[in-house]
Amino acid sequence: GAGVSQSPSNKVTEKGKDVELRCDPISGHTALYWYRQSLGQGLEFLIYFQGNSAPDKSGLPSDRFSAERTGGSVSTLTIQRTQQEDSAVYLCASSLVGAGLNSPLHFGNGTRLTVT
Amino acid sequence: DQQVKQNSPSLSVQEGRISILNCDYTNSMFDYFLWYKKYPAEGPTFLISISSIKDKNEDGRFTVFLNKSAKHLSLHIVPSQPGDSAVYFCAASARTSGTYKYIFGTGTRLKVLA
Image (tube, helix red, strand yellow):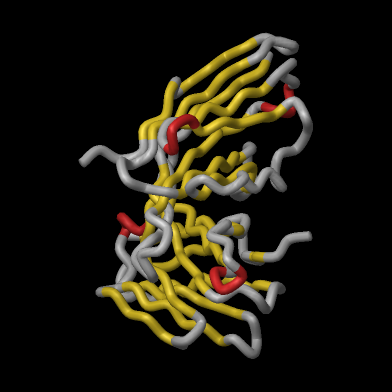
């Protein structure tokens, strides 16, 4: 029933600190995505998990960014040593891969990260 | 390298008229396209999709057109309503390549004037 849930909804952190952002996808969805939207920008792809396959990390902007997906469900995006340019809305989405055309992405409401 | 482009950052349309939002792509491997609508402080919500085997898909007031030779798709909203005012994103993926990774455009802000 529930949609994609992200926590926290807002996070303010000091430059240099580490942060963890959490995503609970829709139950049964095999694919999970992280995107970010910086102020005035579009949706920037970060990382994509599909089932048990190795994640596609091609969008991660630096090695300070990492993500895990435990048990094929919950995902955590970790940003180490945060910088001011990391300030953005981080969006998580999930989809039911393999369902043909009826498998669009379902997004959460995002975590607004502010690095001071 | 921006593979999906929305060249109009904003568009204003009178209520009741047609809104046409455009999207261009460069990757010929893309075979599945979607449109999303986003309100402030909310995640994007799915509107309509189209497979590359079609050139048109219609759902109520929303119609998506795909021109593969021009690598261009458009979203038509008719009649436009004030509640349609939002940012619209197009997205594409290359499913036959075995990936479900979606690349998004930069968005077009639609304002429907009452």
